Length: 106
Image (cartoon, rainbow, N blue to C red; front, side, top):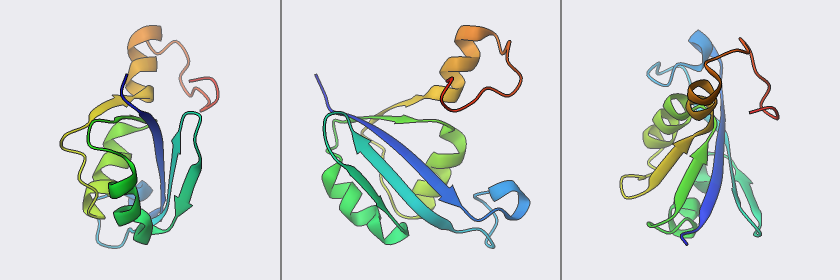
């Protein structure tokens, strides 16, 4: 079984954090490997995560479109990884019965 990593980003909030706005930047990146350690840092942690998260690893993100655009913009290459978006999976599984589900709930 491949490694599974949970990855999350925090950004500035101009235009709701739009990753295509040059005014926004990646502030923090967090990554957690099940049974392993948590890696947290500013955008300069990207090269470390690129080496740490092996190419065959599966990534789990909460808001795929948002997080993945910001990670790509910061130079993280996830082209050879399987990616699961928890927010999209929750939407498909529940039919969006909850309008604003909590992160813990998802």
